[in-house]
Length: 202
Image: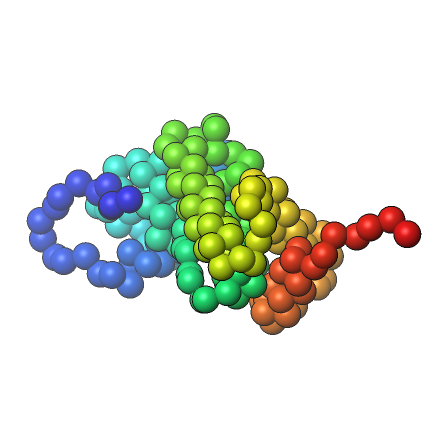
């Protein structure tokens, strides 16, 4: 996704101002949602004038879409050589998405996408990136004999992503600050649980 601002002449744009505006947009959207999102509020949070924003983006929809594209990252496929390593890497990426500075915005996206012009497409891009990454991992795992033929990509992805989101959302507010330091440990634990032999009745 590329920037949507119209061309202008005069003094070159300051990349640091661009970054501050985009981060402010992501933070505001995460805190207030689309109903509380406005150019005025973003400008106030970023410490710039409204004119600085309108020089870069014509509408608040364009501002939000570009900010989310820059600071709410897609999930990438990483071939570590083993299924477990691949899934741990995927879990870590998802955890960073949902416990980082953009976590509230990422959660808002899944809830409010249908009501915001263009945002539904951004959510689809993230979802498809997750699916592509998981599908590639499963195919490699089957090829290496680590998974049986016919393993469901959908169930694997639902379990992994659902575990990440549930972990983040169920953590009490006073413990949320501890989540970034637990990313590696929880990713290992989640994947080990996912890959362990199924429980059987005695």
